[in-house]
Image 1: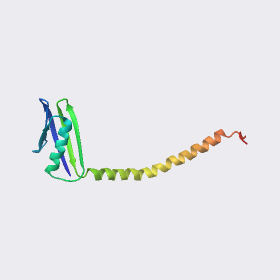
Image 2 (image 1 turned 60 degrees about the vertical axis):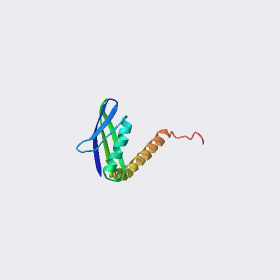
Image 3 (image 1 turned 90 degrees about the horizontal axis):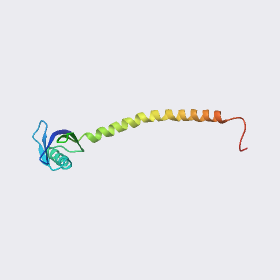
Image 4 (image 1 turned 135 degrees about the vertical axis):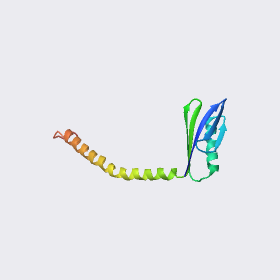
Length: 117
């Protein structure tokens, strides 16, 4: 798994990015294009697997881009599986509450006569 963090700056209508603690860099006319180029640069530096990227503006003329290659997809899947495992136990509790609620509604609504009988 590779994590690449870039410091991005806008000067004269051009966005430039330099890797924090590294030699990778790229430039583009928009943050969208810069993000795409940084993903390509990070992929060419090595690594394989799923790719996640994010770009956050710190000010109107500076930002941070992070590219994560590999390992991200598996963690999400494992977390999803763990959540659904715990959800099975809690799903039974609302059913019991619903039964109690239905029973109490029946008790409240029963006045000893049948309206449709």
